[in-house]
Image (cartoon, rainbow, N blue to C red; front, side, top):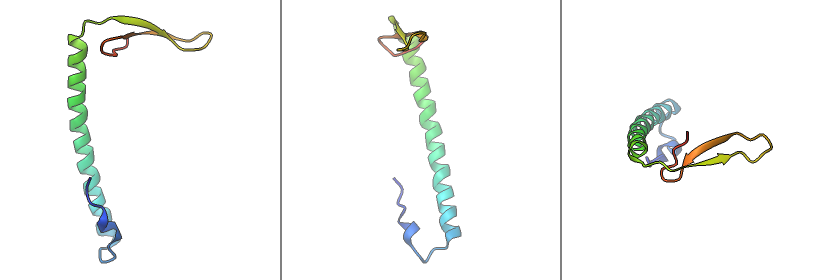
Length: 77
């Protein structure tokens, strides 16, 4: 995690602190997008290669919706 100690430095203006936070925020958003892309690629690969074994699940109420979930990979259909 990036060091946020600069937030307590009274020698740095609030505007400069805000700019530094903006830079950090953009960096984290970029990293998050990269992570999400890798996650999606792996998830798609797992689903594609899985020999699905679906089980029916239902919401726990009188007219609950039902869906099917693969016991192996968690894919829902």
